[in-house]
Length: 613
Image 1 (tube, helix red, strand yellow):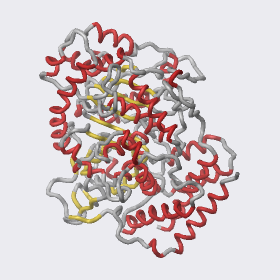
Image 2 (image 1 turned 90 degrees about the horizontal axis):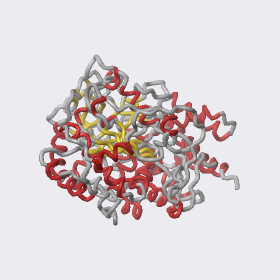
Image 3 (image 1 turned 45 degrees about the vertical axis):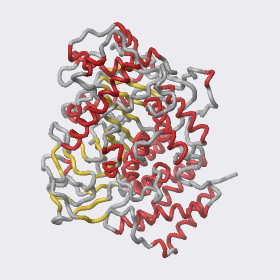
Image 4 (image 1 turned 135 degrees about the horizontal axis):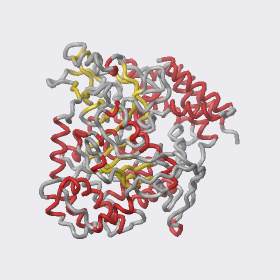
């Protein structure tokens, strides 16, 4: 059956409804930011070399909670010849968990690793399992698909993956036709609701783009709320019980800045750090933060342009997640480089190109840093333009947790990238390392990372690898130890294309299950003990302690030792590690014609609407 004409009819019908339905005149909308009086504290601060007082207070309080949890975890993971109580008596290691981008694949593979870390998961504290690492962590970072995971879990009051599987994560229909391709009436109503919300924001004087529509669509799939997340702000996390009691890691979402009239993103881009307290960047071309609660406020030189006139509600949680995954210009680049003569893709490329020219393929933020410092280029425009956090190739959100001010000891970097045959090959790590060699790094350091061919040839993308094992190799600030955990087919072929928008429940659950086994290495007790060694390693080095035989064995096995093997390897086609547990293969490859057509219609629809707003 040729479905593409039906999609065109659907879009045509929807646009007819939009143009003739007076009920869509925007009235009050929970998505629209609202005016309010301004707080007594300054709305903008220079990043300097310190954290905000709020984050400092949170982390200090969090240390008191994680210290005994780390004691329980390290003891359970069977560290040999090591006095855990003595080690933790005067120090609490700071653990960060970072989840890469990669669409639903990254979200679901990340969800599996998250389940493996979560003590609330049934059986996760048995020998060989790693439950409790989540509860003992200080920071939680995500970008793009990883931001969907972190955002969905955190915004729903730090819930569990199992609960989201049973209540909200229903991906059986595409996000672009959530009621199924044949249920046109319900899908039209779905788009009407999205349009009405975005129109209300536009009528309130805020620039809207494709990302507003994208965020509203994501909200329905990720946020368990009667109003589908319309009024759920990212800063509302501050009022959630798990956050107020400091019983969750400090969450951070990452996005990239995109200069006007650019499509590609370079390693020198401004990386934005978005947390419940602050929005801003450590990058030297901005190097400032503003209040997340009051995002959208028109500021000049750090002060409200209109006295005591501030805005709240701009930081809609799904809009933040949509910003971090705003990869429409990346889709355009892929189309342009594909050489495809498909009429569908050519038409989609033309639409996306027009949107890019009009700067509608980004997320638009009123620039809170306008004229804050004349020395920094991030302060020169009234609008900040943000895109997917992985478009500078730093597809693992490591920038926030390598900042010296955060003093992180170890980062567990979950990589679900699609570098080679839709498996990761370390490109994200290479990009972060290359950034550290440039002025844009602004005092941060990063472990040496070999080239991608070496990573593949040595099998470093087929198992966990430690980078930065020897602190004496750093000439200035010592980076956290990076524990690289790449997606790999342990029990299931989870290399599903980023542009797959539909997962049946079996595939969803199999990708999650594979992620669990990726992080536990099939529930290996040896690997579990090595995770414990990674957690204590930096402080053991600082104290000048002798590394135990057990931990030295782990370092010998998992640390990259500097070996290079850069010969070209054109194939990477891993096999299932545990074939007895293998489920049905999900396969790889590109999005099918049906999904491409639906995506095209979504873009065409929004492009048409943006012309009218």
